[in-house]
Image (cartoon, rainbow, N blue to C red; front, side, top):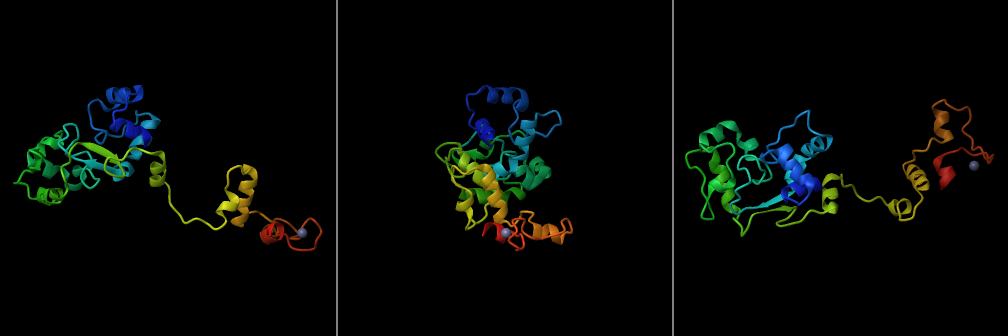
Amino acid sequence: MRLIWDIFTDRLSLWVRWCKEEILKGLSFWQLQWKQSLSVTWKHILKRRTSVAAILVYSILCNFTWSLWHDPWFQNFPLFELIGNRVIYNSGLPRDTTLSEVIQDSRWDWPAHVSQLRDIAAACSDSQIGQRDAIGWRRVGGAFSFKLAWESTRLAVPLVSWGKIVWFSGAIPRHLFCLWLTFHKAHFTRDKLHRLGIVQSNLCPFGCGQQESVDHLFF
Ligand SMILES: [Zn+2]
């Protein structure tokens, strides 16, 4: 995600310059087609495209580089996906047209003769044309942060009550993993192995005479 952000913000780096010259070759990031010949990194980047589009917040002035049809500036979807080829053809605007074609003097100016574009035009009338063009991460003008990127990719689940007992700074990874298995009752203790017919006896090997279970060993 960081690499995608670097491309949007035109970060001064050799990698960004190389990608623009050799991979994008003048295309918008959103127009690039999946190809077998792409590097593993780029294949991964293209897989992330939809989730990144959902995060970005476009502030619009009249950007001459954003593609009207392919960049997800409208409700986080490329217009191309929402309206299809026929409507684009009917609009009379070329496929590589930029957003500036539908903005005149800081006002929206959509082709009036295409009925399918009227809904888009109506929805756009609510969105302000800002002071300057910008792409924000999660909010208007927001910068990229690894924390926000991580939050957007992970599956958020409620904290478990035993979380702090298992995960804390300085914990020994082997112990931590063992304890994590314990809370999930995932150890192959003798009571389980006996039920599966793998061992003959389910008794605790310390000779206490009780069944060996997770509760017996740890609690
Ligand atoms: Zn015992």
